[in-house]
Image 1 (cartoon, rainbow, N blue to C red):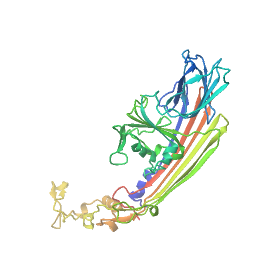
Image 2 (tube, rainbow, N blue to C red; image 1 turned 45 degrees about the vertical axis):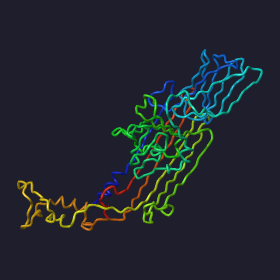
Image 3 (cartoon, helix red, strand yellow; image 1 turned 30 degrees about the vertical axis):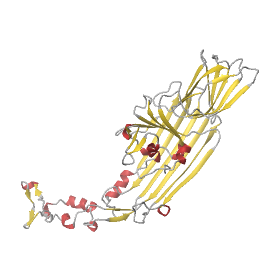
Image 4 (cartoon, rainbow, N blue to C red; image 1 turned 180 degrees about the vertical axis):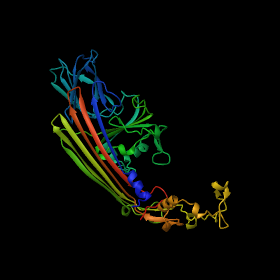
Length: 435
């Protein structure tokens, strides 16, 4: 059975990608980390430091808690926390309990939550619900943290896998940030003067950079519904990240409440307007990007799961303009050319056959070469300048799952597994598919 080059390409481009990530968060983090910290100083109403106060930090989604004690100067630090929403509870003898709720902690962020305690007897408990300050004075860096809600609400079409290679639309959000700019192709961008090849991409602290080229391996990104937030940092990055510009993606984890959603993103030429210079036609186009995700508890306050799937189906016909040989060239007749075709077996003298200049003797043409030439350039297309239209069918399947387990107040464990299969059946050269 003959196999066309296009079919061989399709087989070579069919790829299954899987990755498993596991991170154990100990008191001292190892390698790249997306954890955050909460710090602060505890004082009395007169401004005096309150030493040895008990500080408990509670994840409001999973109820995971960690308790520390302030030092003699009233300072405390709770480190290695998963990004999420937290409550901070402060207790000290002789003072009313203070609880600060709805504290949003992002990846690699340090949030300061100071505690000002009232004397016991005037009140038994003080509860504060406030958002984080606009300016973060604990981190001398320039960074932008983009939540899943912000990504979903953007005017750009970031949802789903945005092109035939399986790359995620999250790759192209960079140019929309402060300091970002586009210079040519989609992958040719700059952030605060750094190039795209100088960026370090990671998912949950696990590198997604190509070991060969150093750039982002786009298909390794999780489904859109799996993304909790993305942090883009450009100044004073941690040494463990190793590049000028850092892109950290954090995946969602399950909580004590079940939650799920589904989406459908459909695009077709009937819903698009022609460009400003188009001749009134948009061209055929059909894209269907859909998926769903769900998360919740397996063991209350102990074990949680989150699963997400995203699938892309796209069909965009294309007409190609190849550079094809003529039937005479295929037979070895180059007499129409003025440039001499020399014979290396005759001292470099021009070919000649039956007295015709630039004509190769058919007996000198390898039968194997004729066979492969027929596969690349069948006689039905020789001499043509436009071929098609041909169908370009693309599919990408992304499946991701994550499990979080609370071992103790000091140790938590999560595991993430992903499977991505992308089959871009596109025409990326002047060769047409065999019919």
